[in-house]
Image 1 (tube, rainbow, N blue to C red):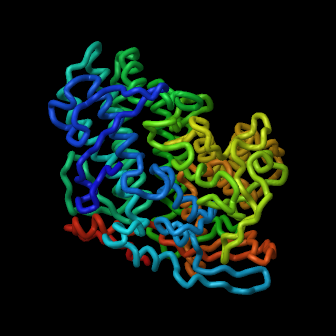
Image 2 (cartoon, one colour):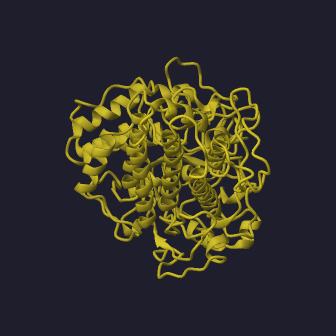
Image 3 (cartoon, rainbow, N blue to C red):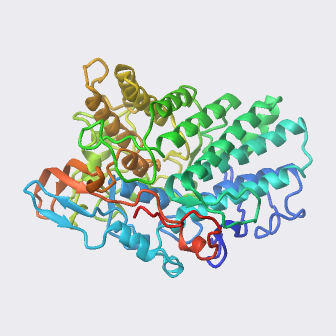
Length: 560
């Protein structure tokens, strides 16, 4: 399915809505011509606006809109995040997945330096063209495509909702849909602002502009819409009307496990978690080579301050709690927004490493503590995948785990089995509380939150709270646990960036003490890796060329 044509501005492309099904995968509504659903003839009833608002999120936002690897936003754009976090490797040529996560150079245990002849920055610049996009080789295109499609769909929903006659408490029902659109606009802007150096604020349906603003302004706009969603939820007076509408907006097949229909208070807590995330992932908190006082001397963002940490602490304290409903996704046999076998990074990693699209990295495996049941339950060393440079790995991700009860399972290709966390989660919120407390000097409190996540996922390792860890030791546990607990949730690159690991060694970055296996089978345990990845991506050429800047803000990151 093509949602957009490449020769149109991404931010003004026509909306295509395909309805999602319930558990039985039957159609919920026929809204007429799906290629022109904004006319009065298409969306003029309560059922129509609900279906429109649902499809605008799950199809325009999350379905594969342009024939890329896998079939959803969670297969390729999130796959890039895991590749650049060095949680995964790849050797396929699709969409530059084999190049996007390759470091500039590595230094092996014996001092041998191995350099990458095609560094990431040069790859990004070489392939950021409309021609490369047409050939499927422009990695900058995909996240921008779907998130602005999501944003525009929400704009259209907001334009339409005021024209719809509602039953029951009309204000509560209308405000539920408005909160839905505000929430997802916040989500879209957060995704753009966290990945791209500059972006566009587009708050009118089908209307674009050339007034590019810096990524921090995009994050501010995300915060505005998250807060507007919370305020709108607070104005709802009929809980029964809210429950009836939101239960239709969220696909029935996702209303299982940690997914479902959130109460108003639960949704507000989800918003607080995402507001905390916006601060955390877009500031620097360097922890390079075990040094909590490390600094990055050249970056596209600034360092966290005590005020920032306190803001994260306040928001996360009011964030997702254990047992809260969060926003999740599930695969279905048909009429899905992602498939069981190709819709997530986890699915594309599950199986024998010699045949999977993504390969588990040795650097990811070294983040597990000794005796962690999540390692024993999910990975095997039956085969070794050999490739030059950094991609050789002894590990494969076992489908459905190895049968250890109560232990988190990382990967499956069974329909409906994998629980995709689209937004925040209990584990993420706990680990933000952990990191904020540790950085504010409350080390023991912070370690307690790390223990809570390990208990929740069935790790079975000894508690770290009360063991007398220093600041550096506590941050080591924190960084390891975020990599392990939040794998596949689209946060890996943001974490490595803010910890300073993806920056050039010459400006204070780099990653040290890494495990790396050569194709000859030599296991190195103290490898230095200089990733030198672009911290915030350039605007994709499909936008920058067709919609040139009218502001003083560059569409290419000037720091690279």
